[in-house]
Length: 247
Image 1 (cartoon, helix red, strand yellow):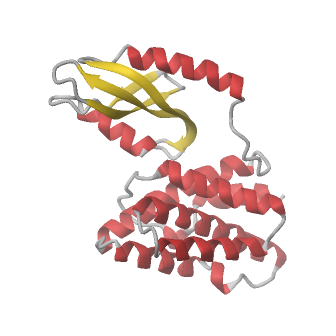
Image 2 (cartoon, rainbow, N blue to C red):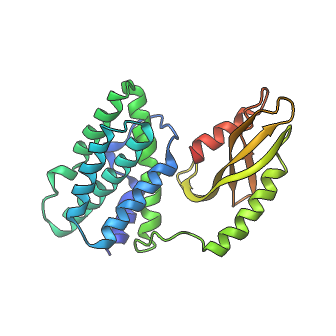
């Protein structure tokens, strides 16, 4: 029942973390933070939440990147949302450490140290909150099961289809190697979970001979592909979509 309650709670979101004009950045990283939350939850180690959150934010002082901050926020926010629900259901006071205002204080401090201004901090946190509120119910409805959404065999078949699709849209470049595939669930513009394959290919320019690595995205629902070639005059939409759904 607690998982079901978590799904309901995330449908409206944690009001304390809402900000206008969200930025769609680092969503796959946020998803990994939600997965880490459920792994700790499923282990039954409730003290592990606070330990891991403190460790995560401490590591930010060593490796201060937006991606690392997004992961810590996701783990922190997921724990806050769960603990608030548990406190309501059991009529036991919520831990002061997990209260949403403390979560927001921690993430704002970290982003401020990255020199992000207040507006950008609010937009990032708003976007990450939307992503977390999408993925928390998704895993909650699976009773906390964070296993891959497809088997190894299913992914091999899928990735073969993705290779063919990407090969069909790459122009003026030779594909030397597909270097990375990642099958993800991520929020769409309506805040609904969708399946996407994100990846990278090693390419060589036909004109200059230069070698580089470029990203791609493939959406399972409509089988559309996007490739950021980095070439002059390339469609900016491809780079935008890949950044928002895979970056």
